[in-house]
Image (cartoon, one colour):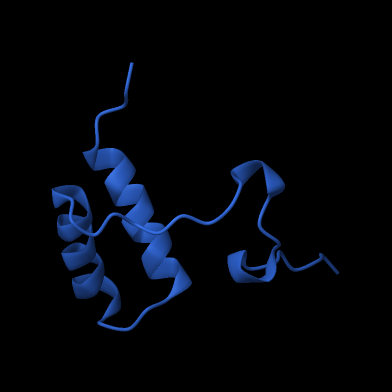
Length: 65
């Protein structure tokens, strides 16, 4: 039997990521990403919803040179 892959929430946070940072809730990028996530996942808070928001913010924001 093949070993079942662990879910994201079962894995430890990699040390290379550092400490957890909260979202800057005043930005336009966060507000638009949050509204999309609310439509897709509902009003509750979940890990998958936060991952969706963080990926959407990264797509929205231009990278610094």
